[in-house]
Length: 207
Length: 207
Image 1 (cartoon, one colour):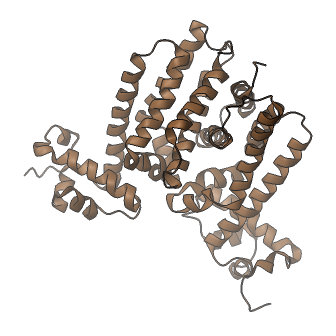
Image 2: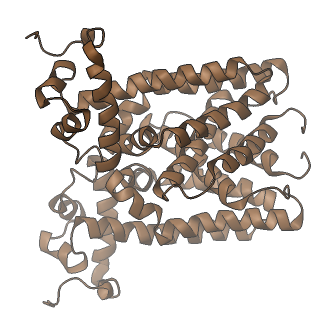
């Protein structure tokens, strides 16, 4: 066992997938108990590792949250990009962005709970709102809008920065309501409502 | 001095406007220090009253937050309704809703900070997300959408519940970015972008 403590290289030394297991366990524990109340010991128990093992990979609970945020956002960004690659035309890509965002929430509700609710603590909000993983996600959306204006399918007056923020906020609020309300309404139907609403709002000509 | 402790009637006994002064001070203190770190003593100092005076009106810091939330939301709801009353047609009312929402944020940034950032703590989020003042605000927006569909200016497929949530979320995120980013971008220009985006997204016929 190394005595050098946690390091960024911890990831490449993930023998037996322990690190990945810890991150998965952390998502479940943070989602169930709330980040504030959750303890490293609970994460260890959920991951079926000794408490000390967690500190081989992460400095503390905050580091665990920050790491899982960046890694999972990178994953979601790749997933989103892969979905968009197959789609022709910026207006149709906006629809795909909406559907994919809400599908990711639906398929990974524990992760959504952590990203949408647990990261909203005021002390952490600023940090994560400026984090790379989140900025890249907004950039994907912004690039679609810029392309739409360029190709002429979207109105030339569309301001990429404010509209991407608006679309993200709309999706985030719908996901938040779904999570807080016990996941009772149909997120797929909501995706279709929002896709149509946004596409019409952006289109140079009514579809 | 009564020994019966805080009571809902505290408000009607607001001799010399002390209660109102405490609420105003609490908004400034919660906005500046964060609700979590803020103390009742700081609120008392800011309001220029003795610590004990606060407990004549409020049970504790949480009660102060809950009270200021309900009172200020009632005020914002009245303000919004008054603005909308003067406007003809649901599509134009949506534009007015957007402008008024962002104007209230701009004109009362400390209150916006408390409502948009400090209430987002996961433990409090559920409670306030279901609170009357918030529900009424969404109801105002929902009523505009229902009227638009009824009068035929909005698409018949518009689902009031999901679209009002989406519009609220978009406005909330734009306001959040403005507050977290040091109030540097032009919220009025953003309001025009969003007003156009939403009106087109909802319109039965392209405007």
